[in-house]
Image 1: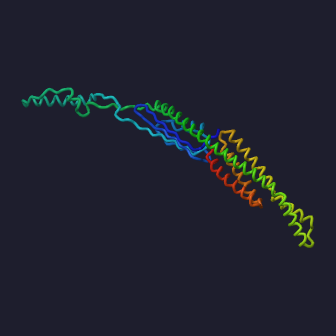
Image 2: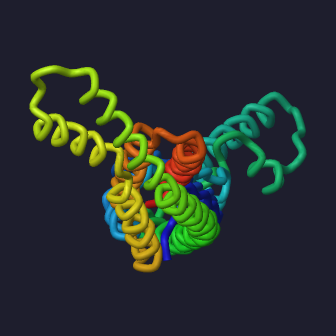
Image 3: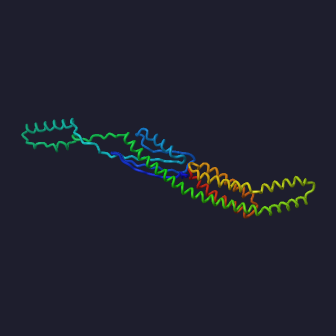
Length: 296
């Protein structure tokens, strides 16, 4: 099976106090170009991601994004003993001064004290970066598998399109072969008439040399080789599609060969119907080449 170079996948996960979202997308590319946007404070994460992606992908411009958010305020509450001591000392001084002044104060309650600034504080939460990295990579493996599955599905649809286009090229090549056979007799008669006309109007011209030149012209108008090569290229393309794997570069090379043969066929045609077939071949080959650009 072949794979498409275009694909997309996403996923999300959480490990208190963090939550995250993965996103992988790719478009066509001559080689494998990985662009990763991940936090740099997780040691070794980017290197491991590149290793996994390089092992799963061969071609394409691939972008991988990781967004991490951290929930604040998750730490446990604790008593700041030094601040509590300072508050209690201040209360003691206030009560002592009030007694000296003959002022009666209500007894202080614990609930009043804990509401004073700095007595209760939230302990900072320490991030477990190694555990976070393990969780991120576990989630990424699923996203990468989904991404690859999408490329496989796209590749299967692409293979059907390419097979259909190869069938059309095969049919047109068969049509060209039939037309070439039908024009052989006419081409021979035309060549004889031209030879006779030249001989009748030329003095001192070597007849054998002239015949050789006209024979060369006849060979140059023969499209048998082009037709045979087109049939061979169709077989080679079907073989690559059946082989599967990263065959995009080979298919692209074959498309150049297809185009070369179609151009030569048009230039040698010297027949309206055969020229029309050649132009139809060029059109379907151009369409197929656009599709081949998506194959990994």
